[in-house]
Amino acid sequence: MTNTRLEEKFESHFDLSNLVTYEYEFANSTTKPLIHQQARFLLFTRGSGKFVLNSKEYKVKKNSIALIIPWDISEIKEVDQPLDFIKIVFNYSAFTQYLTQMEIFTENNSAFYKEIKDNRVRYLNDLEFKSILRTMKKFRAEVGDISQYYTPNKDQFSRIYLLTLLVELTIEYLRSKNYTDKSSSDQYQVNINEILSYMYSHLSEKLTLDKVSSVFFTSKSSLTKYLKESINYTFKELLEDMKFSKSVDLLTYTSLSIKEIANEVGYNDDSHFINSFLQIEKVTPSEFREDYLVTENRLKLFQSDRKNDLIRYIENNYTNKDLSISMVSKKFNMNKAYVNKLLYFQFEKNFTEYLNYFRVTKAIELLKSTDKAIEDISYEVGFNNSRSFRRAFNQILEISPSEFRKNIKLQTSEGKIIG
Image 1 (cartoon, rainbow, N blue to C red):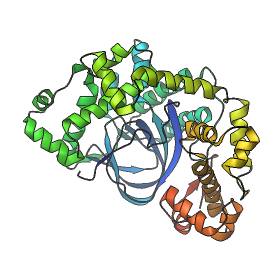
Image 2: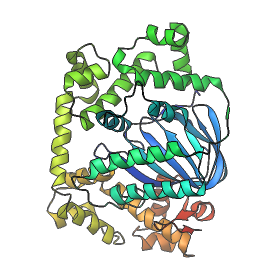
Image 3: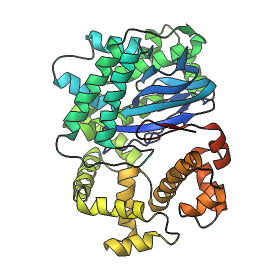
Image 4: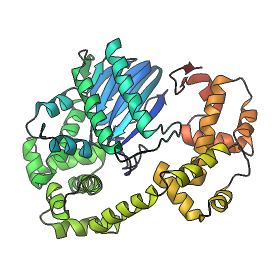
């Protein structure tokens, strides 16, 4: 557990402007334990291996599905055959807020939440798998595909449609009958997850080290040592990180007042919350919310023609070795900083990062569908030389083009497996 690390707020390509993201991923090697700040569904479509979630070990293969919620700890422990999976990342706070507003479920007393927390990895029969796959493809049609940079237009109904789809997907998941066999491993990690889950769920109760240690029947010194050894956090650091993470979600996705948010995340008063937020983000909560909304509204001007034209221009000209941010800026009469801001808002990547990602995405298709030499492919997708291509490929996928061609399967947007 000493290697367990905390997932950064935007590590999973999750953008505050997005309620949900869709991505198709591959895993051909083990991973280190990761503490998640964003919820996600993982639908395994190919391969086999062992997946550890909150210290419980599961065998995963095609038709397996996992549900991860904030502050879960996961890792891929073994890969017998390279794993392919669809990843739906979503904002759990916005999701639970929506359920509460529906007045059907409340987090404190509903069996719905207990089902979510008690059932995390399942096998699906063929009918269940096909049904959930269809639902996941609806997400892709609505929000696009990060791995392929497919970005459809959104309209004023997108948010409510995505929340409805999340409810549909969750209910389909909970209705599935076939559970995976699971065996507990190190109880040490189970307790860590229980502590994280308890703290996140009870932030409004103004948690203290004394209170949390009493809940888990341990001393304050033992709990302090436990957190430090397992995730290298002090209790105060962990609590502040959780408060900040949840407050960002509430500022972004709800209309709660600053005072209500302060109470929701466990501050004694709104002034304490404002000061703490200011120290971390260098702006007040109100300024953060206003800047987010202004930025979102400003960028909505580009949701139709201009933004789509700019992205389409890059994607249509990626093979041009002379394509540069200067060329794009001049073409669309924008300064370079604004081009980068626009792309970062959409993809969390600046111009160079986005162009390299798009070129590598096209190279992946050629690596798997043709026998062309790697050097020829590098020129075909727009790199000036094979050295820069290999460097970009390795930075993005942490594997060389030749290793990828040899070991990784590719699934097209139509579901066809290549390689």
